[in-house]
Length: 158
Image (cartoon, rainbow, N blue to C red; front, side, top):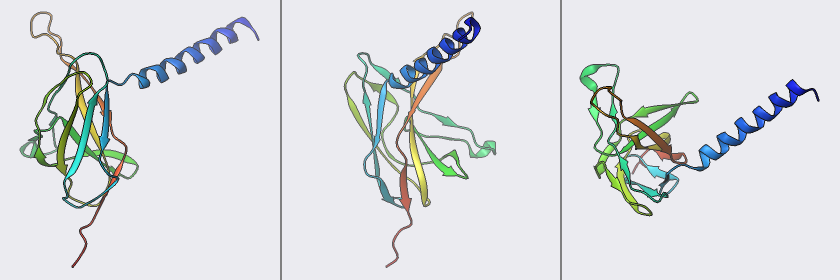
C-alpha cells in the first residue's frame, strides 16, 4: 500500500472509530415504557442521567409554519412522528412534568399522550453549554437523545 493510501486508510479508521465513541457517550438514556400505546393513552418516558454530573433538561420551543401556532411544550421532550421515512416534530398532549435538572444516576419519569396512530419516538433535550449573554455573545448549545420508536394505535371501537 502506498504512503498516501495508508494515510487515507488510517484517517478513515480514526474517523469511524471516533463516531462510535461519540455515540457511546450520550449522557442520557431515554426509554419509553411499552412499545404500543392506544391513541391519547398515557405514555411514560423515563430519562436517566448516566454521567457523574447534573444535567439541565431545557424545555423545547417548537416553531410551526404559522407563527400563531407556536407552542411551548412544558416537558423537556419533543415527540416526533415517522412520516414518509422522515421524523417530523409533532405536539404531544402534555400530562405532567416540567424542564428541570437531573442529578447523576437519577431517573425522571414524564407522562405524555399522542394524538394519531403511527410510529413515534421521544427526543429529550439537554444543555451542553448555557452560553453567555455578555460580549462576546455566545448562544446556548443543546444536544438531544432519542428513544426507540413506539407505536400508537387507533382507539378500539366499542
